[in-house]
Length: 489
Image 1 (cartoon, one colour):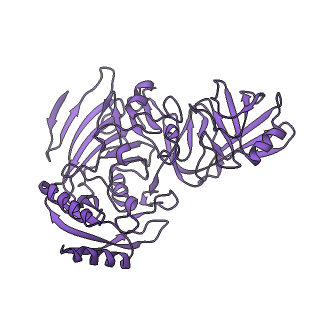
Image 2 (cartoon, helix red, strand yellow):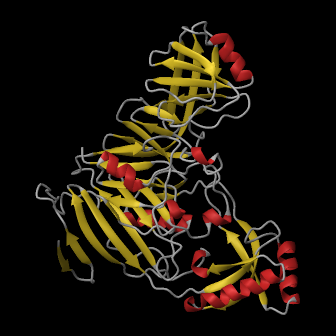
Image 3 (cartoon, one colour):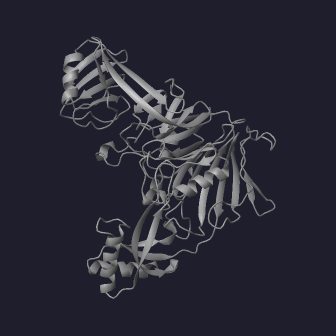
């Protein structure tokens, strides 16, 4: 690997396979920005560039310095960091009655495209530099001994003014010179969680990042299930949450949009039933489709109808068994089980009609083998402007909008190039992460005209080749639901 320093102190590294033919500056359609870093006091960043393969460059970007320290946040009656003014005033009085000096702070959740601003209040005690976290912890212990719930807070996480620092990894994929393709994967099964490294290795991907959010509110053995649309190789493996953001991958193209899915079971007698879900736990009276990719048993307490690839009913059974290769299972309980009993008899045909509709174009996507879909967390940028759809995408809270977390971000440029980025966070003094507004600013700075937030926090991971290139906030790579892969062909 060779390195040389350019004006402005930016180091560029090149690691090219012998077969790689990098584009000239005139040919490149996506470039790293020359402007100052967009966050904090707009410092000049340092970056190191590595050419991964033809059309793909990796940038290691660092900016800012550490000036934030620690404080102690007294929790509200509901256990949250902030709350109403009366609750904050009551907590302030409780702390002061102990002889502690406390302050009440106003917290403003910024307005976004689909939700107004909101004001809440926090009660805090003390201020310590980064090196004195132990003193903040001692204060928390004292408050807890007095039966006041409290926690240590790093001020860089607040989401208000900061000097950083930031540690980001950016992959730029040039639409003009990249010759591979994009894909989604859920690993060995829908139900099981796996690391990005494992999923990337299995497909021999050149780049991989974590995908959308997964369901942490279901039973432990099913927590790999995506929250929102998942299509892998043209097959719907998880239904959409209607109207929420997603990224549609087809060949070497990527598009950010909003989706709706409909799945209908049609009996040979003409009767139809709405399939409420795909590869997830079933609620009362629901009809749920399970595919061979599910990787877990169907729920107990209902009826299963096993159908083959042609829709023929090849088995009617009590629920609670695995899905055999080459089959699908329609599971129903309550009223849905009654429908199966009446309209899905042994040797009958039950057609499963699946539609995935792009809500921007109002057209159905063709479920071909090169089609993949990953659900996003929040829309960030649309047509070159910040448009944060936190409420529609299920993340309308101070914690998600204002506070800083590790982020995994995806954007497309005007000409269709793809930008993948991670911003590490929750590492005081090392990297602060970003809030939604900062994430949108960052992606616009990189040249994205459309951008989306994927899952973040401890899930944020980027793999290049066989190496994890960022530093997950959990200290180790987390098992996740799905991943976006960049394949060499």
